[in-house]
Length: 249
Image (cartoon, rainbow, N blue to C red; front, side, top):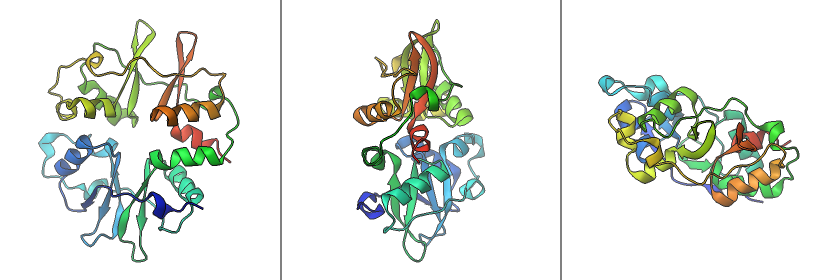
């Protein structure tokens, strides 16, 4: 049986009194959504995430991360993957910290890494339409990419369908900005690059009638976290990894 230790990876950690500007730099330069916070001796205090920290403007550069720490229940290296799954599902995060007997951070387990294992161990019942979110946050191809930063901090999502004249023409994600190298400029609001310049096309999508199992397999095959749901040419929803997890008994 696979254990948490089998998926343990090194993840960013910050001391509780480090500046928010440092946290923003880490989050905009890497793919991680959460950063674990320690007391100076690697003892876990909680985590900060992208939605809280990126809301802090550059003019508040003396603010420390201590006021943004959220509680999280860690796992230990001997936890089964099923237990790790339950923890990630309960916390609603994209990772979970792994600690030793003294609550010192050893690393983390990423949802993206265990997701392929989880869906092979479970037969996921239901359709995409049963589980998808119908409240879809979208953007247009002509908007500047700093708009994506605003959408992330307001919605908590990390990828957005791009709509033009009510038709899906692309999808733009934090990964696209990181790959393009203009994440820093988008966070600071200093980039006028349009979304169309960085979005991914063609879009991988599913329909409401397709099985949830198929949607999960598509996420794994293409290494993506969110899938737009189309009924013909109409965007009717979106489904992500956490939606799949919530459908597992």
